Image (cartoon, rainbow, N blue to C red; front, side, top):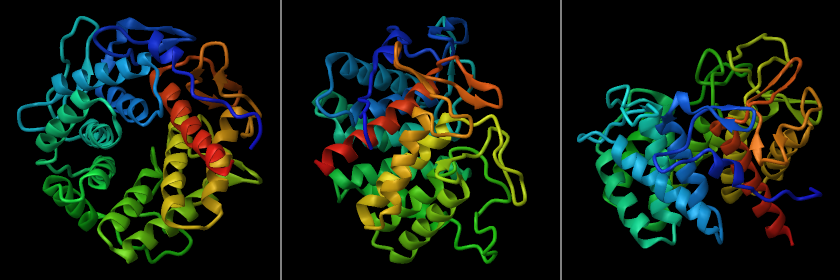
Length: 339
């Protein structure tokens, strides 16, 4: 990997006010009229609190994100997802992805933050949220990642252990169809979070069969989403057996999910493919993709919203920018570790 690019949080900071980070952008400018969402604020907490030697602006992002999640949480630990620009919640607390991602963010903050106030509050909010269980596999997978993060710092944490155990018990067993081993009829979104959660749970709970299943499933997904030497990820509409590749629109969140999963796999398995997968994810943003287009704006630090047949969607929303930042964090750590 050459020409290392360090994470740049400038665009994310420009997208943020005292209330939260705006979800959408028109090119590099926030579209304030669409408000904020918990999904994004939870992902910000993940990325901001795992940034080493974070600048004060990034530390402020983490605090803003945590305050947002505190306000989004219902009394039973479920989560609202959408907040209007005027500060009015537009939905009721539920156990959708925003619940799982919030637990992921809280567990990461509790484990990695060097801010004592933030770490303590994140742990308390995690404990309330972790009493719940979601019927949705991805929500439970996101939550499992947060539980695994907290257990890494506090191995005896009962709530995290119980949540991770329940998540592990629900994870799909190996599929009999060798040609399509994926546990769903079609690939959907943030696909790599499913095998990553298996890997995290298998390692934390000492379940070697679950760990190996996660590694096998991630290897299949990585092969399936590679064309030639570059990533060609699942489009926004999903993909199933027999679908023609490449397909569009490709979303940066798919690439970031692969980077997350490969980074975790590399911590428990020495196969070179995980580092190669991470390098390929970084390269996707640099232009090694189906369109040979760079997928971020070096002037703003924002990530482009998608890869279309006609080139990048040049809007720089929060989800896409976080996908870029997350991938660059992993790539940066890889380069530093190799020096």
